[in-house]
Length: 203
Image 1 (cartoon, rainbow, N blue to C red):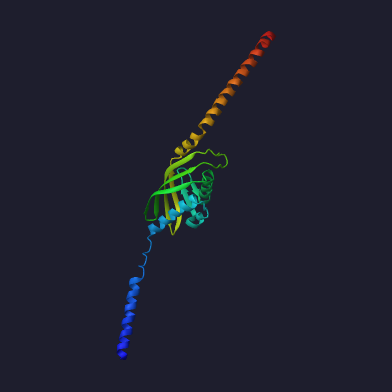
Image 2 (cartoon, rainbow, N blue to C red; image 1 turned 90 degrees about the vertical axis):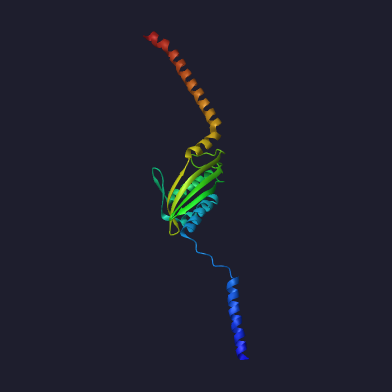
């Protein structure tokens, strides 16, 4: 009798263990380096540009971060300042990731930026212009930190979109300048004609 009870208990224990393993969710596979790097790239666009959480810079960027421009490089502090100014100029700035490719420690992102220039910063006035531009950014990400960046976008397109809202103001300014120059020229000619006979008589 005791042997039967022991056999039943062992059978129940084995059955319970098998059932628990079958019903438990499968263990999640570990993320690859490329998947982790893509997640960091997503945070950069969503948190910094879309949400304005500039503290994310310090969380995902290396202190030795370098943005390689065409003619000069920018430090992390300079990149942060540029992002803050862009967000002031375009408060509703929204960056959309159109395509992302990761290989090794590099992540390449094709993105589109959209927003309205309703803010001003320094010498840059508010124009109300709707901005839409596409660009490409390549990041080198190691040990969970962005260390290098290469970005390219059509800056001339942005300038054209801004100027399209200012064209009537610029046309009015140009016309006022032409009228002012014409008035000055006429005044100088009249002044010259007034003094010319006196000079001739004195001679």
